[in-house]
Image (tube, rainbow, N blue to C red; front, top):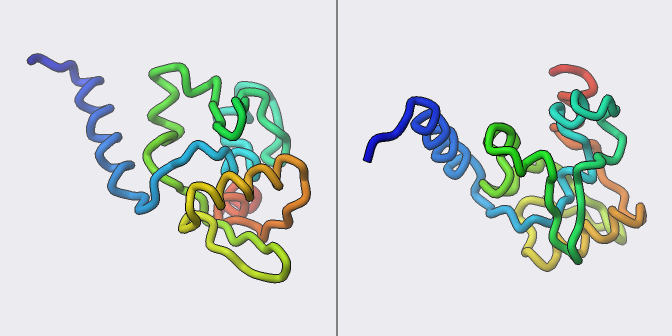
Length: 132
């Protein structure tokens, strides 16, 4: 089987991303609900705190319409693992979001969609905000 350089680069990127995140992605959409990615900011001219128009839900499963592009999808890392570095606080308890069960993640994402969840500023948000 002969693969192009672009295909080989994409496979290497996929392998790196799959090994980087210990918890699998369950498509809850919480990461995108917290902060819009740089690609969506460029494409739609939105701020990091704005809701991304490419984020759509079918029940409790999130989908990124930008990720339908084979060139953009690997850049976003969607499906390779839960990459969020956030602490959620509900009823005074702190939770490391990435280590939660799929059901808990979907519950938290649902609360975030309805704006009833307070979240401590994420590392991702700090980088976007302060460039560190």
